Length: 261
Image 1 (cartoon, rainbow, N blue to C red):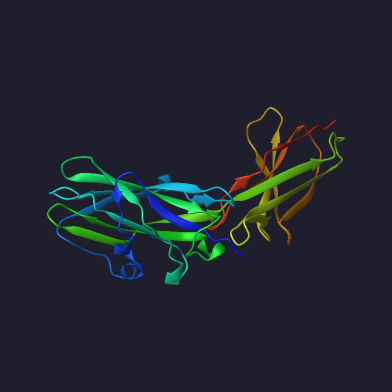
Image 2 (cartoon, rainbow, N blue to C red):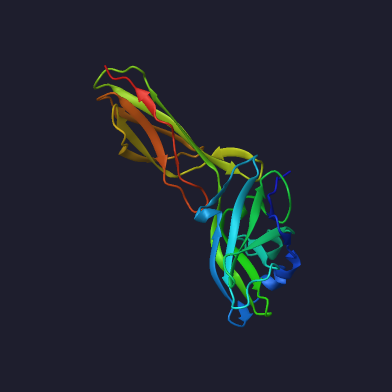
């Protein structure tokens, strides 16, 4: 059975009314009334939300808005996934806290919680990609503003990368074989599988240096495995480095030291 991922909106203030941003509302045009403005929207500190196979991942959301009468606490937030089918939108009931920055401005915060082990309304790996955050903010004088895509953020499948350089030690001028594997989380079965046909850099850091330099670029094979050879020249560390994709974060393997004699 395929495992699914669920999303909830949590905070420490008043309850969200998730139905106010239902699938129907999500299709509406941006709108509003009065001079209320949304000044800033941030999800997870501006970084992608990276989800593995077992641990629940939380991402803070903040919406800063202004109106000459001040902002009311009944602010609504929902997050919508990249798939085109509205039955795959993630949102749930939750809570939000609004804190006054000044008489006219407040920042409302909540938490998006991603659980790769359970939930509904998400179709496995198709949830990886660009998400949009929808929000509706109201003012004390009944002004309001709705943004269907107040901001966007990425949800990514956690990646891992290994490396092994051998033989160790090795004579100068002899061949070193460097193997490894690039894998990423699969939300269909909650396991890690090889990430195939991806460019990965082999990098080297000379003993005593803090800087890695790229030796060559190879591609992962049909199972995510990596293998190449280089000539031994001096003591140092080899690692593989993956730059990432829109659905998978960048990752560096921990350097493997080779003693050249």
